[in-house]
Image (cartoon, rainbow, N blue to C red):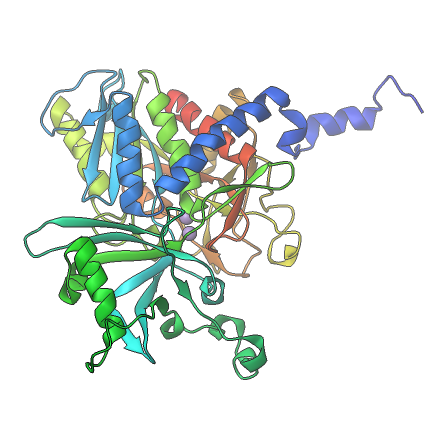
Length: 469
Ligand code: MN
Ligand code: MN
């Protein structure tokens, strides 16, 4: 039946009910194209920045291209100056000096550039039944069974006693060899299959196969290991002892790919949290001179609790604000109190196959836009900074005024589990903070899924925040 006049109930509903709608149904073709184009550059960033070190290098290279310069403490900067800080090669900060003094507050976006992976142990190399392997210690919260029978690449550095740094990157080029953690065949897995899923593969079973060819036919033992060491010596000039001062990370060897026949999604290793780091970086690189000084921190160590001098549970952020304040002769405490932050990190998207771990009214969905997560934590909001209503109200208005497609999210059903972000460490310094990020399927798996529209909306949200917060 055709009905030109809306019923009273329909009109009232439109006025009073919260609207929740798939962003792809409302943004129009032009915005969708913008999102897809934005994600082409994002995929390139994913492939160039699989580790925190590579993310620092790639991010600084992008920043330098648009005029960012190393920050020098003590120098008095003026509005519009674009600066960066390389923090021990594993985290970085990017700043655009605003028109107002820093004591009036900065707008901060903070994302992390470390992702779950397999780190080599300090004495990793061994030979067993004439095969050479690496012992690993997993980094971050992985589901260990997902990391077997997946092609792995090796990224990282050896640091020799003379201080020289040797970069390692094997397995990314089409012609490179790759590595693998092997698993049992189903035919002989009767005992293993009785283990619980979390014990299906144990930590000490995450051993990476790296070679099988003996050095030559003489009678020494451990000739396969010797041959591997010889290859490493020829290529990098390193010996077994150099593994002691190395950081070598095994990550999935595949590249970021469009996902779905409609190409609306991206499958990749390390979306958590490059899917927020890249939009946050891009937002600050694209900023004109803002009113408030804008800062973007790309942090390390989030996946293991943010401890360490490259994590956000350090004084790194405090020192940045302090340096900025000193240069203009103002008080750091005042600047911190007046500053605000988007903690840019992912949230779990509802999975159609595993809906029961989320609560449908408060969970995030693919293509519904960037997610505001008021609180994370576990067991009754323990371990979260829980953003204030006032601050969420302010962010909400900025997002709506700038036509950002956004939704709210919670990390799973009450008591289903939980997790945290860097938000609480930043909040402890006195800033207003809320989590904002992209919904992810298969979070922490070797191949994670995000939707392109949500990635683009993260960028739109963060740039609007720097301009208006
Ligand atoms: Mn994260
Ligand atoms: Mn994570």
